[in-house]
Image 1 (cartoon, rainbow, N blue to C red):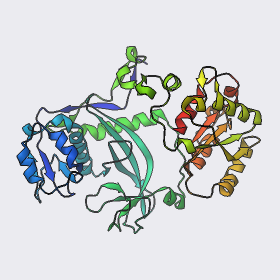
Image 2: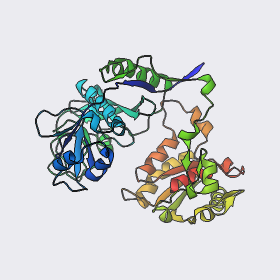
Image 3: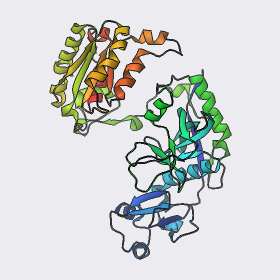
Image 4: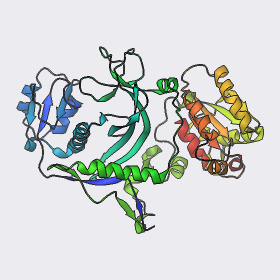
Length: 428
């Protein structure tokens, strides 16, 4: 192998700067509060032009904008020479991608969590009422002139017909006005839309919510197909995806670290590229307001392991400090714990433990530490179509809003402190 292939492609952007179109009503794709918009366009736009148009808008009100000229309502057009395009470049590229995928009959989620854009491709029918979609997630990196993309879901279920729902339902809908996928979010006057199946709906349909195992060979084929069949067709005069395939990292660059792009910020405004040493030497940048309330649920087979780990977390190990001396957060033990005898016993105990002790839907003040339910070797030997206990435990705790950390018992007694960082990170 001479290089490492990565799921990114370059784009080509024209030197021609587009006009910017503004509206006072929610009928354009992007929005920004008046006070922030003024800062973005300062020193270029004629102040009297914008002030006259924005008369009556408060600083906290929103201005809606797009790079596509509207055709059926009043708007203000800002000429290309009157604003700094670099401050809006990322939004322009996102709009090109959104328009492109809408024309290709994809369902589009323009503002997903964690990504710049998600698009949904119909794969198959689930039944008469639901269809199966594959979700692609995209990120725009203007400083590199590239678009990164990945498959976020292989089996998203979307209703074929409109459905009714309650305003308080935690669902995403396909908005009837613009056909975008959006969270319902308690919106008033919204009902009778197509919906995206949430966890509860999938469970009722008998669809597993287990995390899918990653097969890099299949993923590579799917990403290349998405690039060849979709992205390469984006070939406009002002924006196009570059031919040549997915980007790659040459062998000589594999072990190089771009320090500027990998620096993390820790306490006292100090930076480090290593999370473990940064946490150890400088502490966290800013504690979570909930950190003082976190209580630990220990899940263990041997009480000696649990006691030793508790002491390490409280007092520290070698030159790695304990949580209290480190950031002034005490180790608080929950009244709940699980002591099991073997993986099968733990599996049998989980459901009854959750039902009896954690009946509510969400617990934001708990963290579960599971000691050695199965080793990494065990997980490697599990066949593809089997369900590893590791994922089963994670899923059941996460359904209650409880994060988990897994530790092998041999690491507790090895003198290693590298697992401290993962536990501390979960707390904050």
